[in-house]
Amino acid sequence: QAQLVESGGGEVQPGGSLRLSCLASGSILEINRMGWFRQAAGKERELIARITTTDLTSYTDSVKGRFTISRDIAKKTVYLQMNDLEPEDTAVYYCNGYNRLGGGIYPWGQGTQVIVSS
Image (cartoon, rainbow, N blue to C red; front, side):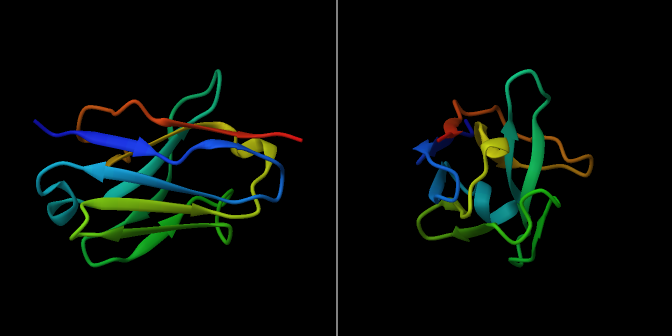
């Protein structure tokens, strides 16, 4: 059964940095485009960073230039380096494979909470 386990969240001040990790079971990373999603309180979950099986990356405008997605196939892990964090980045962050519509493919993990506050 596919399993995704996110970690690395926490509380930081504006301008701070965090590195999120997502451990994926089996061969999920090798066969799927992977993405980081986030869901803020009262809002829908949104896909904010993508990485293809050939390591092409793309970002939603709100995080472009501040966030970097990467993956390590050997470690079965997807990362999200988040710099220059803003209060608007406060959300629960999830990773998953994504489909053509930008939705998740596998059962969602528990996510990791990021709080940006002074």
